[in-house]
Every structure is written in structure tokens, then in C-alpha cells.
Amino acid sequence: MHIPVVIIGGGPSGLLLGQLLHKRGIEAVVLERKTRDYVLSRIRAGVLETGLVRLMEEAGVAERLHREGYVHDGTQIAANGEMFHIDFKKLTGTPILVYGQTEVTHDLYDAREASGARTEFEVDHVEIHGADTDKPYVTYRQNGNGHRIDCDFIAGCDGFHGVSRQTIPLSVRREYEKTYPFGWLGILSRTPPVHDELIYANSERGFALCSMRSASLSRYYIQCALSDHPEDWTDAAFWDELKRRLPADVAERLVTGPSIEKSIAPLRSFVTEPMRWGRLFLCGDAAHIVPPTGAKGLNTAASDVQYLYQGLCQFYEEGDSEGIDRYSERALLRVWKAERFSWWFSGLLHRYPDQSPFDLKMQQADIAFLRDNEAQQRAFAENYVGLPY
Ligand code: RFL
Ligand code: PHB
Image 1 (cartoon, rainbow, N blue to C red):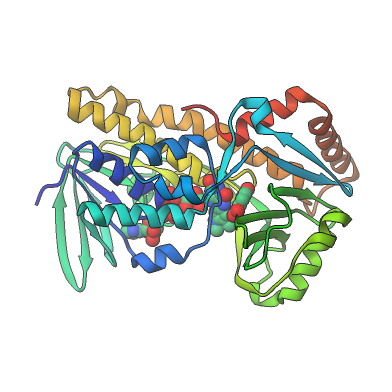
Image 2 (cartoon, rainbow, N blue to C red):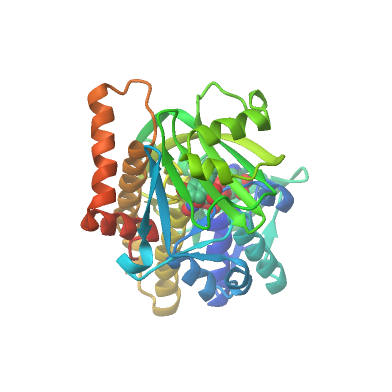
């Protein structure tokens, strides 16, 4: 069997690429290791840049997102018992949209099913063959049976732990990584958000973030030790610690309730280069990871998808390989800027075990500069709402 594009991974990158290609009449199959319900049970991103919203529109899946998403014109930064506002709309003319990754994925699966496009779930032993030739193919197992799909191109959208990146020989692949000496403990609760914008907080007890999914569903995070386990943290201990990291008036207004999800995510910065090897293209978390401070992960996956989608359209519609040939270079230019912003913003807000008194003073000065300097606020806002692509 021959299908033009095989997409490995049915997370947001793979599904968005699949839907965009489908709209242009380019056939693709999505191979997903888990079930649809499992993919939809993962609570992850909550902030969408306009670039991703536009791609969802182009894919014809933005109706619910516009109806149920929350437009935010700015964000709050808290430090030293105070809070200041960064006005994205005033500084850049662009807002962000609060709409969960789970919902994005849900909408993309619904559209995929409605269009009759093929998705294979619960596949294992996915292997990529001949990616450096003109006749690549993918093999996999499903329900104990072996399968083979011949194709023109393979999109590796299988996340950080997928097989696609590992297929690129070590003689070609270069990896850049930074790990952070802490994680984020996150909870979801059926409580109204404490503020109508997100609050990113620096405190002497560590970082905290107040986010949301809707008017009655809140998402909160606190910096925790890497050795912590979610079960070590009772709900009461979480709320108590969160309150201690927020300005007193915010803490007073915080409505607490039982958590409906609690998990710990380690923080990592990671980039692999190149993002293309022959006919294999890496997209999203398969190629790069950012710490979640700044909400760039899903949004950077979306810009990869846009560059690859354009390249594939150019190839199939105009017989021109310029877009796919320059895919890695274009994607990496934007990826590294998102890496820089996420790394810088993480450094601004977290407590590091080895921070010296001098380092702490630098952090405080950096926060004060952001609070007081409009040019710095504009640079922040441009990065947060998403650099152009
Ligand atoms: P995903 O979502 O990991 O999907 C990859 C899919 O591939 C499947 N897979 C395989 N399928 C077939 N064969 C194999 N061998 C396979 N191996 C894996 C997996 O089952 C999965 O379904 O990658 P993708 O599509 O590139 O999407 C990336 C985003 O999920 C990620 O960047 C964001 O969630 C990061 N992130 C955030 N990003 C934002 O833009 N804004 C945010 O506000 C934000 N908040 C977050 C985040 C990530 C977090 N965690 C848990 C890491 C908050 C958190 C806490
Ligand atoms: C979230 O709502 O999950 C979220 C929001 C902003 C971030 C990270 C996560 O920077």
C-alpha cells in the first residue's frame, strides 16, 4: 500500500498536519501508539498563540475554539508581594487565547473522523525504513499483525519519547539539552480562576502559576523538588503552598477545592538538529522541548507544522522542493528563539538551589526592569504572543 504522507504520532502536531493536508487533498495516515481516550486524558498546554489559532482556522477546526476560548489581552507578573500587568494588546496589537490542548486535540480528532481520514491506534514497533532514499516506508504492528506502508514522506510527530528522532543516525544528529533542578506540580480543580488573566509568580518559596481552562475550571502550578511525587502532596498542602507564593490579596481571593488531576512535570530545554533527514521531518516535541514557563511547547509545534505543511503543498502542487529543503533551517530559526524565551523566563521566576545572593539580586533587577521599562515589556509581549512565522 502507498500513501503520500505517513504521520507518526496522533498528538496535536500530527493531527494538525493531517487535517491541513487533508484540506488540500494530500492524503496522510496517522499512526498513534495509544488510544484516542488516552491521548485526550493528558492535561497539558492552555495558551494558544494567534499563529496556532490561524492554522486551526485554515484546517477548518476553529469553530468551538472561538466560541469557548478566552481571549486574554495581557498577563500578570507577581513578585515581592506586588503584581504588575503586561498589556499584550497595547504593546503588540495581539492577544492570546486560553483554550486547552485537550480541547484542541479533541476538535482535531472529531474533524479527522468526520472527514473519514485514516488513523491507526494502538500501533507498536513502528519502524522507519529508507528515510534517506526516495522510497521510504514504515512498518508497524497492530493487534499482533505486521503492516507496511510505502510513502513519499514521513512526519515524525511522536513526541519526545518517540522513534522518529532516534531513526536519524548519530553521525548526523546533534542534540542540545539543559535540565532544570526542579519540576512543576500541577493541579486542575473545579473552582473559579483567582484572576481573569494568568499570574506568573516569583517568590522566595519558588515559582507559582495561576492559569485556567474556563470560568469554573482552574489550573495551578507550583515549583517542586524533582524527588517529589504527586501523592506526597495533599490538596491542602498544595493550596497552602500556592497561597504562600502569591501576593496576600490574591491569596485571600483564591477559591480552593478538591483536585481532579495532579501531576509533576520535569523541566527541560532540548533541541535536535537537523529537523530533517532525507524524507523524514521532525515536528513538535519530537524535535524540541521547552520548559512550560511562557507556554511555547504546543505553539512551537504549530510553527513547525506550518513550515512542513507549506513545503509539502509546494512539492505536491507546484513540483517545487524548496519548502521541504529549507524546512529544518526555517523551523530551527524560530525554535531557538522560543527556547531562548522559555529559558530566560524560567530563570526570571524560579528559585535555583545554587543561586547566590548576587544571582538573586540579578533576578530582582531583571523583574524590576521588566516592570518599569516599556521596551522590555514590548520584547516580552512579542515573544509571549508568538514571534511571526
Ligand atoms: P505529543 O503531545 O507528545 O504527542 C506525540 C504523540 O505521539 C505518540 N507516540 C507514538 N505514536 C506512534 N508510535 C510511536 N513510537 C510513538 N511514540 C509516541 C504519543 O502517544 C502522542 O500521542 O507531541 P506534539 O504533538 O509534538 O505536541 C507537543 C505538545 O504536547 C507540548 O509541546 C505541550 O504540551 C507543551 N506544553 C505547553 N505548550 C504550550 O504551547 N502552551 C502551554 O501552556 C503548555 N503547557 C506543556 C504545558 C507541557 C506540559 N507537560 C506535561 C510536559 C504544561 C505542561 C505541564
Ligand atoms: C497551563 O494553563 O497549563 C499553562 C499556562 C501557561 C504556561 C504553562 C501552562 O506557561
